[in-house]
Image 1 (tube, one colour):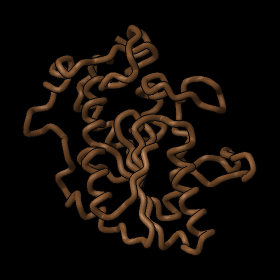
Image 2 (image 1 turned 120 degrees about the horizontal axis):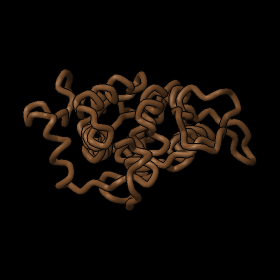
Image 3 (image 1 turned 180 degrees about the vertical axis):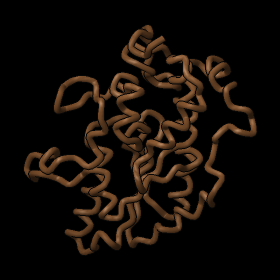
Image 4 (image 1 turned 60 degrees about the vertical axis):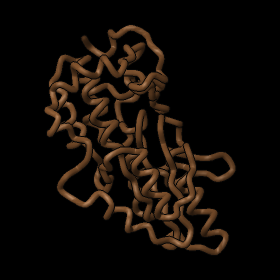
Length: 232
């Protein structure tokens, strides 16, 4: 069944919305799609590196982690910039501030490139509207935006593209558990192998974004590195 043909459901369910009016899937409903992964193959965490090492980059005088659990307009990207700008205005250069952004649960599409948005219809799946077209988004508007795409009243144009924030030292990571769950659910809804969908997700991760075992794991690690917590 194509995602756009699935029946209506509660977007706040554990799996979120799988399409426009998509079907919510219970934990029991995950059994079938996740059977595509053998227990020893279930991609709960990257195994080719030390998952804790990435957090050792957090060394700023002022530290914060933004916990992004769902699409929230410009805020997941505007707030990191605000943190850097206002710290700079009060005497701390951006190079001396550490910012971590965790993309988890329904926010994971922002970690991926446009090809995944188009192939898996992320705009409809995750209820994200493109401000330019006023239709369901078919692109990641926050990666390499055009100059002037984002403007804030009273401030003007703001550099809140993911790539622009990365240039200012902002660290982005994405929840591997959410990638696993959503790829399985979407794979089932599209009659695709969940492994194939998961591998597509992984291949679509934007440059510089770290895959972490889970978003909640990353929240804990960031706070262990003395980051203040801010839910977006």
